[in-house]
Image 1 (cartoon, rainbow, N blue to C red):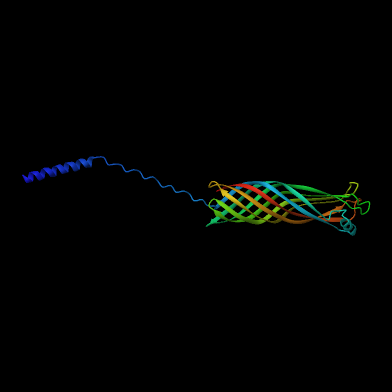
Image 2 (cartoon, rainbow, N blue to C red):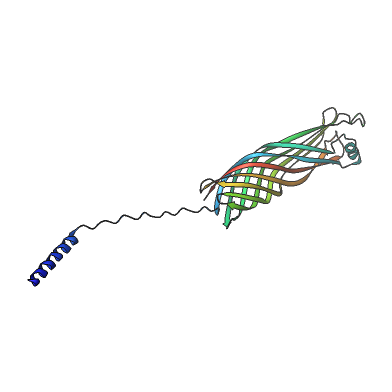
Length: 262
C-alpha cells in the first residue's frame, strides 16, 4: 500500500514538472543602452569670419631738407606735426588651430581683413613769414587697404567659455601721400609711397561655444606697423629743395567673429 502511494505521488510530481517545463518562458525586459555624452574640447582646426570697427590716429612729422625748407617748417608754413584721424569698417576671414591641455588652451590664428581706413588731413599755414608763405596749404593722407595678422593665442577655458590673450605679427598695404601748395593754390611739392608694412599686434578676447562646432568671439587688437619716411619733392619751376614727412601707422580694432570648429 505504501509503495503504491509513493509511486502515485512520484508520478504526479513528474507530471507537474513536465507541465511546467512546457510553459512559455517569461521574456526579460531589454536593457536600455547607455548613451555617452561627448565631452566638449577646444582642440581642433577652425575657420571663420569676422567684422568690426577700426580706429586710430597717425602722427605725421615733417622736416625740411634744405635750409629754406627747414625755415618754412620752423615758421609753420609747412606742418611740423599733424595727426590724421581714421576710422571705419573692418572685416575678413580667419583660420586657426587650438590645443587644450587641462583647463588651458594654446593655439595659432591667421586672419586677413579688408579695411576702410582712408583719411586726408589739411593744414593751412597761419604764418605771416613773408608774403609768399602766407596762406600756404598742405594735405597729408594715409590709406590702409588691408590688414593681416598671424598670432599665438593662450587662454583659460571654463567649459564652453574661453578667455584668452593674443599677439604676433601684423602686416598691411599702406599708401601715403603729401601735397604742399602755394598760397595761390599751385602744387609746389608732392610725395607718394605705397608699401606692405610689417609690425606687431597684441590683444585679448573671449570666445563661447554654443554648439560643439560653432563658436562666437569678441576681440580687441592693437596693431603697430611702424613708421615710414616719404620724400616730398619740389615741382620743377615751382618749388626748390624738398621735405620729408614721417608717417606712423597704428590703430585699434574691436570686432566679433563666428568660427566653425572641425
